[in-house]
Amino acid sequence: MIKEFLLPDLGEGLTESEILSWKVGVGDTVSLNQVIAEVETAKAVVELPSPFAGVIKELHEQPGTIVEVGKPIVSFEVADDAGTSSGLPVAPVSSPAGQEREQEQEQEPAPAKREPNLVGYGAVVESSGRPVRRQRNLAPSVEPVQTRPPVVEPAGTRSPVVEPAETDHLETRPRSTPPVRKFARDLGVDLSLVRGTGPQGLITREDVQHFVDGQSAAAGSSTQETVAPVGLQPRQERETRTPIKGVRKFTAAAMVESAFTAPHVTEFLTVDVTPAMELLAKLKGSREFSGHKLTPLTLAAKAVLIALRRNPELNARWDEANQEIVTFNYVNLGIAAATPRGLTVPNIKDADALSLLQLTDALTELTETARAGKTTPADLSGGTISITNIGVFGIDAGTPILNPGEAAILALGAVRNMPWEYQGQVALRQVLTLSLSFDHRLVDGEQGSRFLADVGAILADPGMVLTMV
Image 1 (cartoon, rainbow, N blue to C red):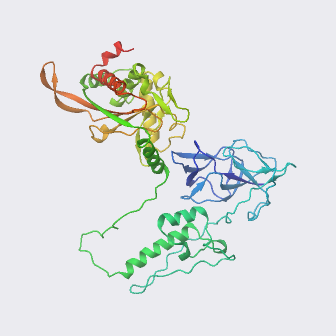
Image 2: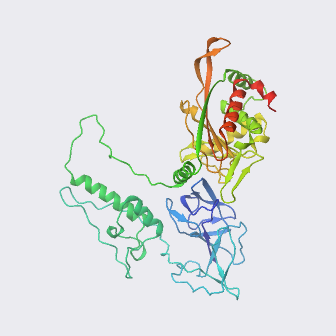
Image 3: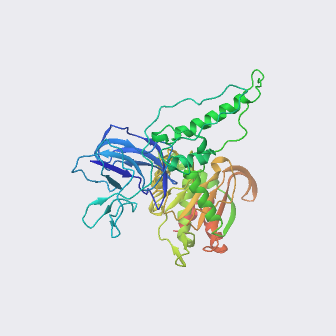
C-alpha cells in the first residue's frame, strides 16, 4: 500500500516550510519516527520523523523548495495493516505501488466529512466509509533530472532565447509546480522563456537555475572584454539579491507589527556594576560554579527576575481581542540570540523558579542550541519578558523593539572601565548602561522607572537583594 506524508503545521499556524535536506532516499527502508528530513519554518529548523515503517517510494519536493502546509512531500510503501502511530498527517494513495499518482481524482460528495488530523487536511470519508482523495490540480511528481550546462553563444552574438516548453494541453502559462514558480519570481525569471526538461515539458527548479546561469554567462560573453591589472581581483556584481524567507521574514513581520502596535517608551540608566563584577569573579572561582559558564548576562537575568516580583506590571500582555491586561504569575524569560539564520528569541520556561546555578546552565543550553540552529518552535513561543545583550558587540545603549506579545525588553550594554564618582572621589570603575523599552499601554512611566531602578540597584550592590526578597 502506498501512503503519502503531508507537510504538517510545525507550530502555531505556520503556512509553509522550506525543505532543507532529506535524510533518506528513494528505496531506503525507514522505521517509525526515524528522522527523514530537516525543514525550516519561519521560526526554527525542525527534524521531521517518519509516520510509517516502510520503504521510501518517492520524494515529491527537492531541497530548497518552499512547501505549503498540507501538501504531500514523500510517499511510503507500507504493509496493508500498517497504521499511523506518530499522529502526523498522511493521505492514502489508491494507485498501486510503482504507478504514477492519478491526475484526476474522484469528486467529493456533498455530505463528505473530513477525518481530523494535525493540519486539518487529509482524506475525505463518504457515508460508506470509503476514503476519497481530495481533488488537487498539482502537476505530476518531478523525478530528478540530470544537470546540463547552460547553452551560451560565442561572444558577439545576441543572447540566447529559449523557446517556451511544448505542452500536451492548452494552457495560459508554462507548466511548473508552485514552488518552482515562486523560485522563478524570486529570481525575476519569465517562465515562458525557460525550456522544461521534466515529464511532458514540466519546468523544474534546475531548469530555472540553468536559465539564470546561462543568461549571466551570455551577458558576460557579449560585453567588451576587459583585462584586470595583475594582482587585482575581478570586480564583483554591483548588488546581491537574497529572497526574504524563513526566520528573517518572520522576524521582520513581527518587528513591524510590534513597532506599529505597541507605543514604545525607552529609558536609560547607567550603573557602576563593579560590585557585581567582583561577585561574578568570586563565584567563578567557587567550587559550586566550577565548570559552569557564569557571565554578566546571568547576573542581569537574575536581577530582572527579582525586580519583576516588585514590579509585576512589566510581566504582562495586552489582550486586544478581549480588552484585558493579562498579568503572568510566572516568567518565561526570553533571550535574544543572533544566529546564522537571523534573530531569534527563545525563552527559558519558569525562569523565576530557578536558582542562580540552574539559570546559568539554562542560559548556556539556550545559547548553544540557538547557535546550532536547533531551537524548537515551543522554545520560541510563550515568552513574557526579554533581554537582549548588545554589549557583546561593543554597544553601550539602544532602543530595543518589544518581542510581540510582551510588555518589556531590557538591553544590556558593554561593561566598560570608566572614570566614575566613588565615595566622593573619581575612580576607575566598571560601568554598564541599561536600556529598557516598554509598552506604554501596559506600563506607566513610574512603573517602568521603578523596575529599571531595581535592576540597576541589584547590579550596583548585589547585597540589596536582601531588602527585596
